[in-house]
Amino acid sequence: MPGIVNMDRVILHCDMNSFFASVELLEHPELRDVPVAVSGSPDSRHGIILAKNEAAKKYGVVTAETIWQALKKCPDLSFLPPHHEKYREFSHKINKIYLDYTDMVEPFSVDESWLDVTASQKLFGSGREIADKIRNRVREELGLTLSAGVSYNKIFAKMGSEYKKPDATTVISRENYRELLWSMPVGEMFFVGWATAEKLRAMNIDTIGALAMADSMALEKLLGKQGPVLRAYARGEDESPVCLYDQRDKIKSVGNGFTFSRNLKGEDDIMTALVSLSDTVAGRLRKYQLKAYGVKVDIKDPSFKTISRQKQLELPTNLADEIRKNAMDIIRSSWRIQDPIRLLTVTAINLVDETESEQLSFFTNIDGGRERSESIERTMDAIRSKFGDSSISFGQIIGNDIGIDL
Figure 1 (cartoon, rainbow, N blue to C red):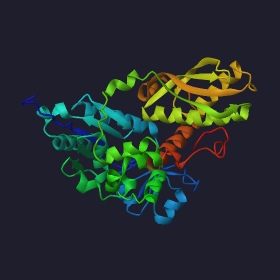
Figure 2: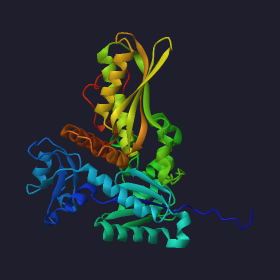
Figure 3: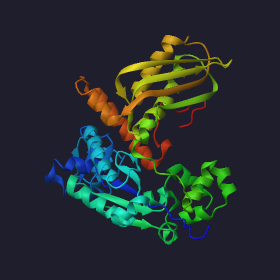
Figure 4: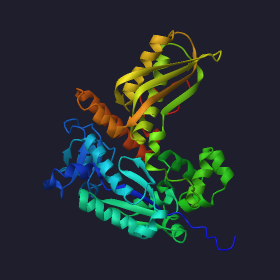
């Protein structure tokens, strides 16, 4: 109809700069200008780098490498232990600032969020102006910095926050995205992991622009349904919405199920399956910043008979090891271990926000083992975020014959 204008959305992606390291340095200002990494104990040279500050980045120190590798690059590197409860606390404070500008705030991880500010511009200015206001407030009120991407879709907003760091705003528009992004290596495309990039390069798809211009059917043959999706992302055709901040509360459960290439039989088979299923469930819980007060297991036998059992937990969890152990307890108490299993599903239930769960368990005595497990699993999250989901896995899954891919 005449007079109707199809207005683009205005979406921000805000990504904290060196978040873990920056939070730790608030209590160690004397280390602010020297190379610093957050890691496990430096006494264990096989520990992993969780985060690094800008000074360490200049030496080539990268997330997920071992301590000894980092020390070879930077012998004077200082180490600080991780404190994940602090990171959750600051994440909550940062998102509260975002909520002053829009209720459409979708956390992507503990240090990243998308904001849809389309309807906020009359109050606060353009997308760039809102991003700059947020950056200034986070710096002044919390002593931290972030980089922001501004675009008309979530994918390009995310890539904008990566384009220039630290403490910068980058606008990726319909007019400039080809110029800014299409010459970049295809591995820089959001959601293109290391393994996918290798497959694309084998087809001479070396840049994001080449991915955008590739044949959709050829991509589907190479990568399955994800191929055409990645092509659409490279062409700026992402239409996914930004969720309301409280929409996470509507998630009632997080589960993962698998029909195996052969029936499971015996405890070793079941444990191999649970290691993989529980790892996926726990990773999704951490991504949504949730914990579970219960675990549910569904078992289907070869004749398609299904049983469902669940267990309530004393403490909420988003740790794979705890989910796996409780799932195994359920199976031992409700299933004859030697009976064949065709399909197994593990589901986290009775979900609460991570921050809320910390308050609920405040007076409970928790040993250091749980904190160490959380540090290890969040390290795995960081490695997978950087190098792809298949970049790190459990030895028990390698070479399995039940159909679980790494």
